[in-house]
Length: 248
Image 1 (cartoon, rainbow, N blue to C red):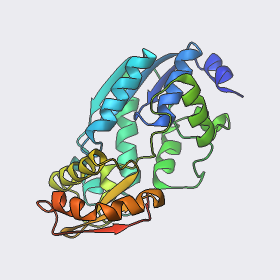
Image 2 (image 1 turned 120 degrees about the vertical axis):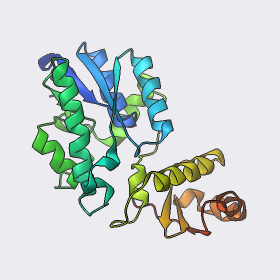
Image 3 (image 1 turned 135 degrees about the vertical axis):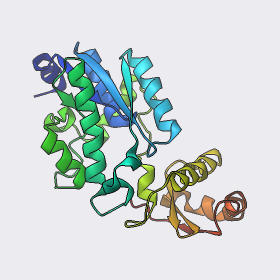
Image 4 (image 1 turned 60 degrees about the vertical axis):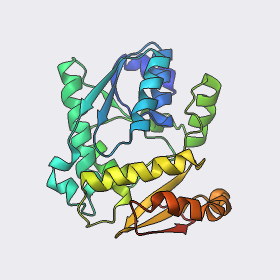
């Protein structure tokens, strides 16, 4: 099966939309192949503003209606307490909100951007997708991440080379309570890094300190800029150190 066949067989669908490269290409393909689709973007404290802005841009570019669903991620103690299975409960809350909204709109098929390169194991997020019966056309059609990027580039989607992004909650150590203040501080710090020209990185909380993780090809630049980074981070963190390994 290819995507054209998928959307010929499934003419109406709700897209769990994040503004990332995978769900953006899925939205584009659904529109291209004539499906009646609506993008559902769940906005919570875990998503930075730039993700929402990217989602708005892609929805406008593909001329697909985007519905924004507000979710208080921290209202669920199974999420805010930051246990090892936080991602599972968070994904359930997100997909539950999308399913309810799509149902109200008369749509029963929910699809997401999981691709053929994503591990097919029982990671918490994947487990939640299976439990809710969410379908993943890119995976079903054998389309890998590399292929998604290639096709997105050919389609003129500006997010084709956007780095993979994990939500702000992943910056806080497992078992440490997640708060609005910690998430806001993290987003502000990462915006500062982005303004300095870094493209694929994480700013993780380690007590009152920041652990800055960058890709190998930007590690030398980060070392050169470390004094500048520390200067702008100083009001928020007691210290800032570098680590060249990014763990999603």
